Length: 628
Image 1 (cartoon, rainbow, N blue to C red):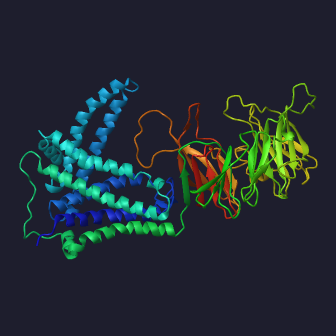
Image 2 (image 1 turned 180 degrees about the vertical axis):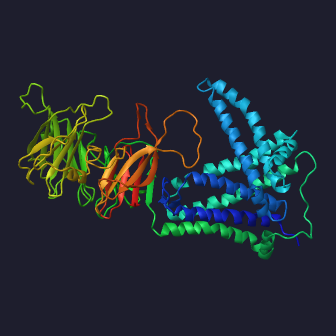
Image 3 (image 1 turned 60 degrees about the vertical axis):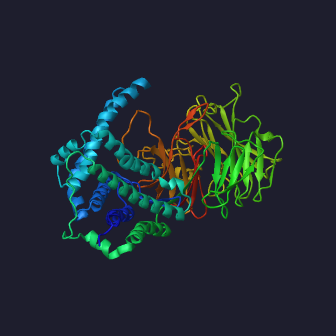
C-alpha cells in the first residue's frame, strides 16, 4: 500500500526542524562572549541571537525545504538528497542575497532624490531582480529532483523558466516569499506580546508549528513550479521495487499516528522552554509599555507592597509584582524638577512636594497636606524631599542670592538650606543654612537642568547634593550630627574635608544622575542613566547603547540608531566585569514641541528582597527585574 506523501513530508520536516529548535533552546543556555545572554522576558524564554544563529538558521530552513520537496516528489532517501544538494542550494541563496544587495546599492546611489525618481529607479530594478530571483529559486528543486549540481543546475533553471517567468514569479511570490516574510514579521520579538509563562510556551509552540506549515507550503510551491518548467520533466517516477528510505519505513510503521506523533514532536521544544522558565535560573524581566508619554518623578518599592510609580500629578500603586495592574491616586500638587519631588514612607505612604506645597497620602491612600503652600519655601528656585529614620520630613532648598547681597569671597550665588518638618503641614520648620556655592540654577538650553537631591546616610545624617545648570559642577552639603550641627558645603572636585561624605558614601546614597561617573562608578565610557545599590551589596545600573538588530542586518539610510536600555549587574561599585541584560529598545520621544533623546535620566528602586523596578523619564516603559 502506497504511503501518503504528505505524511512522509511531515515526518521529514519534523526530523529536521525539531532538533534545530531543541538545539536553539539548549545552546542558548550556554553563555557566549559578545552575545546577549538568554533571559526570560514577560514569562517567555528569549534565546541569545547572534551572527552564528543568523547564518545557521537559513541553512536549516533550506535543508528542510529541500528534504520536503524530495519527500513530496517522491524520491528515495529525501534527507540524504537534501544534504547533498545543500552546496548548490547554498550557492543559489548567496546569489539571491548578492542580487538584493546590488539592487539596494544601486537604489542608494540616487539618494537623496525626489520621491518620484526613487520610485522610478525602484521599478526599473524590480523587474530584472525578480527575474534573477525566480531563476535562483528554481535551482532548489532542480538540484534535489534532477540531481544536477553547480553550474548545471543554474543552466537548467535558466532554460526551464524561459517564457514563463511572470507566472512562476507570481507563484513563488505568494507561495515562498510571502509566507517567509509574514512568518518573520509575526514572530519578531514575540516576547513583547505575551504576559505570562503559559502564553510564552504557547507562543514558542505556535512559532514552531507555523514554521513547519510554512516549510511545507514552500516545498509544495517549488515542486509545483518545477513541474511547469519548459522542456521534458526529469522527475523520477516511483518504482515498486525501489528501495524504501528510512523516512518511508518510519512513516509506514507509524501509519495513521504519523500526524499526531509529528505534532507531539513539535511540542518537545515548547515543553523544554516551559521547564527552563519554571527552573527560575535565568534573568527574569517584565516590560510594560504605554502608548503615551507622561513625565515621571519617582519610583519606590516599600517592603510588603508592590512598586509605586509617581507622575507629576498622580501616583500608581502596582497591584502585583509585575506592575501590570495598577490603581491610580490623584494629587493636589504638581511636581516638576527642580522644584519638587517625592518620597516614600516605610509603610508605603507617599509624600509629594510641588509648587512649594507638600501633600501626604498614607498607606490607605487618604491624602492631606498644606493649603496655599509652605512659607518656608517662598523664593526658592529648587527643592527636594526625603524622610528621616525618625519620620521627619526633610526638605532641601536652593536659592539664588541677589547680586548686591554681601557674601564672603569664597561664597557663590546659590545658598543651600536644609529644612526639618515634624509633619506634612510643616508649621514649625527648623531651617539650617548649609552654605553657598558657585553656579546657577537657570537652565539656558534645557539640555542639563539643575538637580537638587537630599538623602540620609547610614548614620542618619542629612546630605544634600546640587548640580549646577550653568557649569555642571556638583556641590555637596552635609551636617556633622543628626540634628545638623556644624553644617558645611563643598565641591566634590575639591579636596576632601573633615566630615565630608566620601565617594563610597555618596555612591551608596543613590543620587541618580547628579554624580554621573564622578563617584568612581565604572562607567566604561557609558554614563549610567540610573544607579541603585541593592540590599545584598551589589550595584545595578541602566545604561544606553545603540540598538543594533540581532544577527545579520541591512541598514538603509543615514538616520541615527535607536538606543536600547541595558541593565548592568555589578559585584561592586567599580563595576569592572558587569553582566549585561538587555531591557528594551528606547527610540527618541517625539511630541508637538520637541524631540527628546532617549539617553536621559531613568528612575530605579529596589525592594527588600533585591528586586528592581525601573522606568524611563516619560513612563513609556516600566520594567520589573525579579532576578539579575
